[in-house]
Image (cartoon, rainbow, N blue to C red):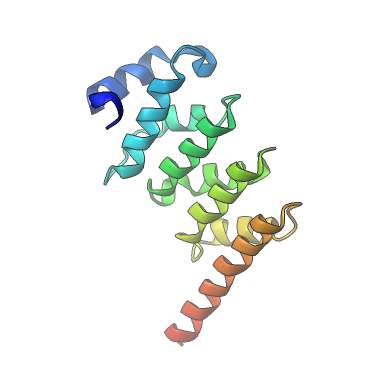
Length: 141
């Protein structure tokens, strides 16, 4: 961990309760939180991470999207909303996160929409994800 500090789940829960407005004073804490959650095996409370999707710093939004990527099917809707973020790195992270859930109809539809993105990388990642779904469908038949 950076600076030798550890972030435990109790601290994460207290941050969710405090809910610092726009995370102005807690960006470094939130960044560490998203790193911790990204490596967690099971995420049960998405409230703080979903709030981070509205942060003004694109780096925080990318961290939130990466954390949501490991949250399971419950995060597909939030990842789909991240596809309209103004920053291309957030949209790329959202496409990569949705790749895990490409077999879900909501994720599939979101990835189809990403094929019309203004950024070539976002479109390419979406094409790759949809191609994987086609490969899995061929194997299943």
